[in-house]
Image (cartoon, rainbow, N blue to C red; front, side, top):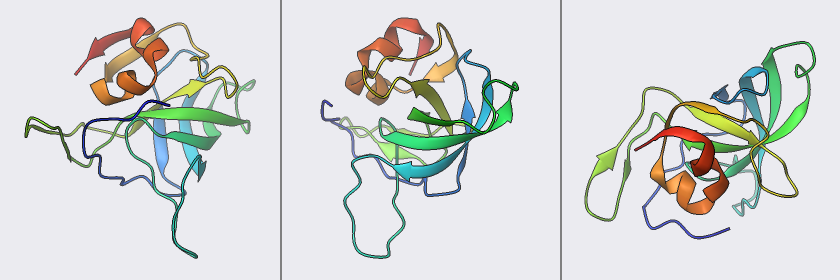
Length: 133
């Protein structure tokens, strides 16, 4: 994974519900774990934009429900700071489901806005996204 230039605050913890914004059939995801998180003992793992999280599909079609999937966080409610001093925040927390081996998105289109920092790390998400902020 490539590093991100912005100082991302990490507000997404375990049990956080994320909106799934691709067309895989999942509507809502619940965070189970955060990949590559290194923290203190007994501290809850946290994630922010551009981080890979392991999720359980809570709402969606019958084929996707109750599955464990990997996803990339592409939007967060908590504001974060970019290197030029600009502060960005979104309306909701959202993620895109990816293939864990190839790091490619499973869906073919992404509805809604995607943060530029997530695309810096995962360029394949930028190819199928409609809007980038």
